[in-house]
Image 1 (tube, rainbow over the protein chains, first blue to last red):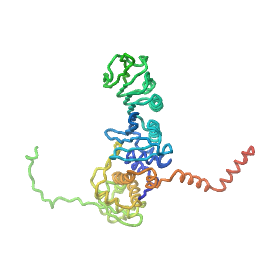
Image 2: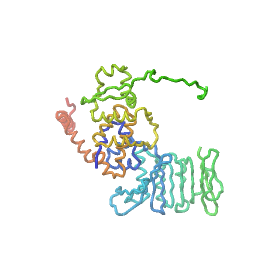
Image 3: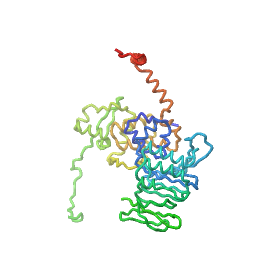
Image 4: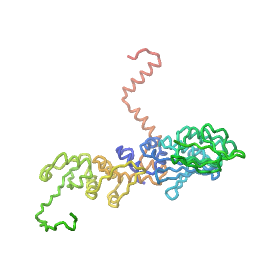
Length: 231
Length: 201
């Protein structure tokens, strides 16, 4: 394996090299040492958005790093084979996908990864899609999102377990800019911050500004939903 | 007037004064001399400004000493000028800040950069120093490509990045290599502080 002294090239060249690396390369480079982690802060990764997708039924999570039409997919799966949290194995597929196998359960590991991308690369969540999760897991992910950013492009919540689940904190604190799709049972009494209407499940609405909300939920025998329309 | 209606005039080509191409002479730090066309020099912002400022005539170019480039050796400069001659007349790319950056390495450049990493390192230094944007782009792309498909441990070896332990050891060694007298003073000061002394001096 040939080597090249990355730390000794001029700053402009160093930045140029980092600009030409894929998010996969930059992520793995940042993992190589503390100094490398500091180095990748000069990369343009912060311009990428992140889609966070967790489906409890599939026991896998996906982080899609994207900018325009270009996407890089990190698929996270869990194994008990590793004893050290943070230890992982990389398997590549088709160039656009990286499978990362971790010790921790998928939602926990997704949170760790998300925090890492935020802290090291200053990246933000663009879209969040959560499905088939228990309340505790959902709460921990919501806490992570609300502590990180005041708005999100798209939010999709589906088949979250338990009746009367309260995601109002998330919806109050994090403004959904583009699409909001909620397909689950919610606590009633949320009229204070939304428009209360009776609709069928999964209806799509578009406001005057072209902002779309696709949402719906059941509350007992009544179909109710709220609509948070962004400015 | 359309092209069809334009009057046709026979031109005696021999009568037209042909503008003589000017070749500048440069010298590397190991005294190797190179003759480079004016158009090729335009790929380097640094050299282009330099020759503009000098305002050399064709006679000056021949009669005055070669322009010395003191930071670059002959082997590296040869690659630089080969690249400039091949790409002369091409537009200089402007960084539009797009992400991810798309840089293609043309076949000629790939062959030119089929060199050991030590020379590639010098080529990048030269491209940066001489401000040759596209040469810097392609050479950095080549270095970036070295990362593809590597694990963190492999990347540390590829890019000669010290491990955290090595960094710590180097930091300790640097502290120990401080001026011994300064260290003594520091230790004495700490000792007096511990003993509750009011003043060091």
